[in-house]
Amino acid sequence: MTAMSLFKAVGPTGEGAAYSWAQKCQDVVFLLGDQMVFFILNVVEAIEAISTCKPFLTQRPELR
Image (cartoon, rainbow, N blue to C red; front, side):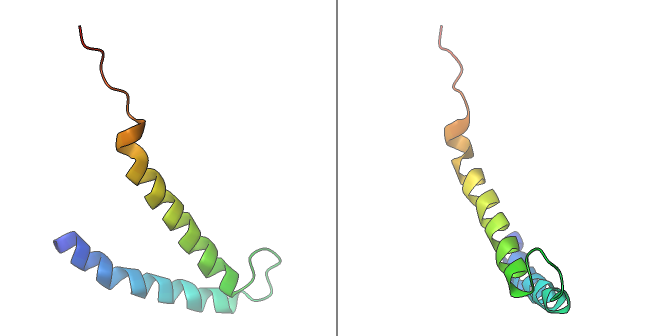
């Protein structure tokens, strides 16, 4: 519960900081401005999706 509450507080703050940082990087050739925020969110979602599949990816020990 403590970790969940912490992430609820840190998540929006971190994304707000990433959004304001992305607004300053409008002249970058790759991932302009707002697109950087969505790229970061997609990376986080991909990590979460892979971590939810982790119990299914482990191998069971052989029974003898």
